[in-house]
Image (cartoon, rainbow, N blue to C red; front, top):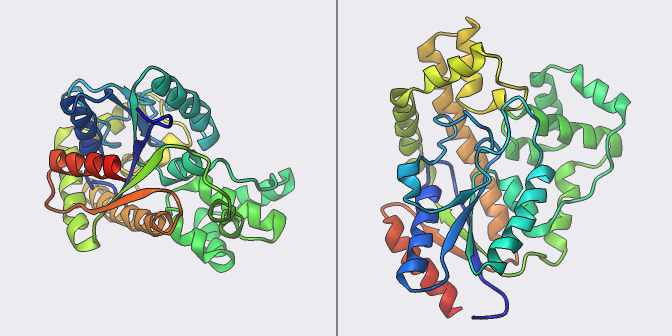
Length: 316
C-alpha cells in the first residue's frame, strides 16, 4: 500500500445519492479485497439524536452493515460547531487509517468539508457589543444587510441558518471585511489533508428538484410530522437543531403560523434553495487544487459509480 492512504470525500447536493454512494464505496473496497471502508458523516444535523427522518439519517437497512461515525453524538438541545466536529473527525480519521481502514467521508454540510480539507480559517472574534447589535436584528434584517455587504456569503448561507448568518454579519461589522473574502485564504494556502480525494456529484436543478420533492413526500409518509411534534412538545429541540429544514417549518405549523400543507410546501422550497446553495459551494470546490473526481450523477447506479471512482483513484 502507498505510504499515504487515498480516500474519498463525497460532496453533492441534498438528495443526490451521497449516502448510497458512501456505502457502495465501502462495499467496493471489500469486493476488490482492499482494506475495508467506514463512513465518516459530515452533516451538521445528523449529529443530533432523534433528528432522524428530517435529516435523512441513514437507517440500519441503508447502512447495509457498514460502520458509520459521527451520527447521533449529541442531544438536540446542545450547540455544536464546525470546530466541535473537526475535533472529532481529525483523530477519528487518523485512528481509522492506523487500523487499516479506508475512511469514506460523506458530506452534507459543505462548511464541514471545507474545514476538513483545509483547516479552520482565522477571523477576529466579534466583540460582545457587535454580537448584541446582530442579535437585536430580525433575521430578515440580517439577511438584507448581509446581501448588501457580502452578497457571496448571502448566496452561500441558507436563509434559515441563523447562526451562520449572524456570524457572517458580525465578522463584517467587526472587521469591515466580508467573511467570504477572509475565507479566500482557503484558496490561497496549500491543502493540508493528505490523501483526501474530493468526489463531487454533479446534478442540475432540473434533475435534482423532482428528487427533492419526492424525498419530502416520502419523509412525511415515514412520519416526519410526528417526529418533529414529539421533539417540539417535549422541549428537546434547541436553538440550533430547531433551524434544521423540515423541523423549522413544522414548528411554525405547530405554533399556528401556517397550515400543515403550507409547511410541507415550504420544506420543499427551502430544500430546493438549500440544494442551490450547495451547488454554489460545489463550484468553489471544483476550482480548488485538491485532487478531485467529478461525476455527472443522474441515472447512475451507486455501485457502478463506486467502481468507477475506485478505479480512477487507483489509476491516478
